[in-house]
Length: 317
Length: 290
Image (cartoon, rainbow over all chains, first blue to last red; front, side):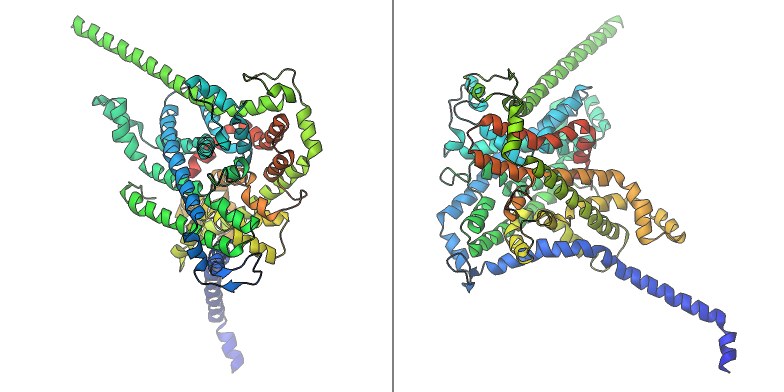
């Protein structure tokens, strides 16, 4: 009788139901893993990965104010840029900016971090605040402030450097000095952040290493190059990568201080894209430049990790 | 014996003297660097408190006398800086609120579970750190235009809702919580979201605070993206407001421009000076840890 079997096996039935529920819960939880990721992935897909593909696609079209209908032109936009002297000038400016800011900022940041890391008492936090506060200022505000400081007639910069024997310079109005002016300002703005990262890394170096080396008679100079510097390599790599990425993002300073001028001597890739997209309304060309920009960034980072990263001593996490 | 003792004492004295000299030199160098670093901001404040004609002096006048607070009120009369401030606060806290949700959920899964495709997906998050808005603003602008979201506060926030950096940071913090703790929690029936909420998040609070500060500062300073997606003053943020103000005044009146600049920097600067230790530690240890 069906009744009796049902009555005879209630326990095994309960057990089976429980087992089934458990498997489902487990499966659901496995699916849940992806549910947790869904919010992030949706935004990443829509605003980071789709744009890359979309601009690569748009770069194959002529699409601007004069041609409001998209026309497929293959690689013509790229060929056009290849022959455009201004494009090469813009790349040169980016390179110049990177070379002007990165080594100086890193060297200064490291030097000052080593000094701040010494036993300095209460003055130490004062130094940290004084050196780090520019990070808190919006780049636009900092740029505005430095336009005033670089004022050729009554600016602070020309006034104080004249004591060092520097001749009066027109800075932002001079085609040779506008980019260096932006570089000087950016070093002032960014150096504190990099100093702080070096400071964090320095505090991770055990004091015993230095004590042992001192006992063996190694001077401060020698200790720096044989202990501190090699152990700071991971920090340097990190700083280097951040500095490269941010040096190719430079936009705000250029927008406020020079608008790319004079004579495009401070025009950089991001500003050039902005000009094409939002001044000339040339979406095809803007997309082409965007695609080149993304490739350039990824290539640079790949190179850094492959050739520099490999030589760096890394702690396992 | 006595001679060696005296020699040792001499040695100690020279070492001491040298150490003192070194310390003095360090203070001198750092003092100089700090001075150079602080000078521009002091000059900003000084200029913003001057009367217009007192700016044109052959030697810099550091102390503004008589003090003129009128520049600040005039800035408010000429442009809606109050609205800009409110918009900035809305945008910045909106970004942070959503980020905290997306980042914690993703970091939890990456830190505590193994699943198919985990490495690849994590890579997708990491690569986002290297693709800034500067490299995607044109297609993103077109997307938002299609969504009919241009010139809204949401438009200024939405590309930053997911954060590869935040996920990375928090994953490191979650990983440090011992496995046993989770096993115990699961046995007690506290798995998944409840474990995340009651155990992981409280334990990872310093990291969350650090990430929040970094997010606030960096989006407070955003310029390019808000510039592109807004075109009326009622939604604009402080940085864009300042940029517009500069164009509107065409750079003639330095006292006004510096007052506007000072106002734009003031909120963050004030908070920074009060909580400087927390800020500095956050920026310091979230750069490298991991």
